Image 1 (tube, each protein chain N blue to C red):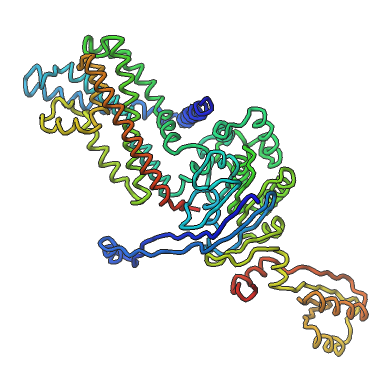
Image 2 (spheres, rainbow over the protein chains, first blue to last red):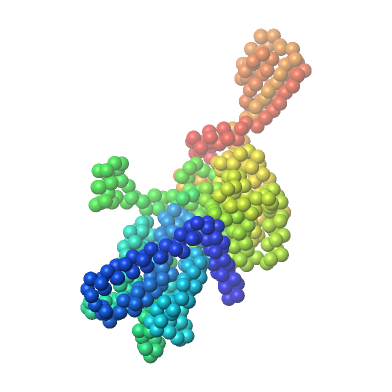
Length: 269
Length: 329
């Protein structure tokens, strides 16, 4: 167990070393999210002005901004679609070989790499989040319990998102090219997980369907905890569902990977 | 016996389409698939400490066989036992016992120094700190790359990169090493360095090496035994020098006369042994026995300025062999 932890934490360290190798790329990546935040701010500002209302679907402008800003941060932190595209390429080009010949797991290695590469963002956004209670007093991370709940829900969201993408990656073994699938899922995920517009603003019929999928646990759930939208007695039930989704996605991923690896051609050399 | 490959068959399924837009559109709606039998009933046994060369033309199935032996591919049928493990089950103990270097594939991280990749391998293979340090010092000394360890891999020359790849593959002290074209693209000095290293490492640690290479010089200088695959079938398994002798049992004689004998004598001699004369230099390719007869007659005629007997270039011999291998087996 100790060796297992040392092995995979070192992969995170390697990802940091790798990320720090190219300074410009790191700075641009860190600030890329602000353009998205600015666009959302300007759009919603105009909507509130044009409609001349104080609340839209129960959200004040400040409340909505707090929700959306946090959603975008969570969306960015759990977004593993770039890692997934790289994993697809690794299967297509035979780069997967370098995992198969070493005592490591393709799933865990890339999960650690993803976490490692994103750590810089985790750090940057954590600093930003420290200021959120001052920008949005009484709206966000109002208690220690909210902060702990948010961190736990974020960890679940990161893992769940990665395991969903991993399932799609595994289809490369049969279809050889599934980048379009990942990109299509990523776009629908942006909307249906509540990353751009809170799920509360969706029509009830659509929300009821979305709640049968793991999508609400990707963004809406952690942000809902941080913005104090759920009472504490709902947390346990929601966490239980989220963990069940994680287990289910992990099991499906493992089964598909085991079947897929038999089809693997190890091309390229 | 450390490797036992039994009745291995491997087929791949691939779709075919005609060239051009029409072909692309047709295949979009209806794909024609074909099965390719890449390996057919391959059997191979290797003992611990052997260096064995796997030979064959491009597409013969050499790399596929290696990929099966390291667990990258699942066979269509048959079994493989490597040190008591089935490769494609990818038991971590098995993966710690083997290593593979592919001349055309990088295993090191491209954007960071090789030393970082080595440290990652130390953690992945759970190598003791002291053993790791000693091993790295030994290998970097042997390959003369101590001063290159902290340079980004992508900034290294091809030869230096290959040396780093080999170091990365050996840090965990594997019992079996698979080398797929390890000298491809390297200059003669680097090729020789890699060959010397393999010899040294095999002597020192009794490590088993399985090697594929299109450079016959690699095979000749390293492998007593070769395993030849032709169109997916096992064609030959045995002593390389015996095979070379069976293909072309000739040697090249160069004899420089001091005093050139008369043309009548030379003509008579040329009827018995075919040779060429240019100025005072006689050259010919003959089997051992005939060559000895000719040589004794030449010494009776003259004391030469110089003479030499050489093996024919093994590259040419193998080229002839692969033109029609069944003729020689």
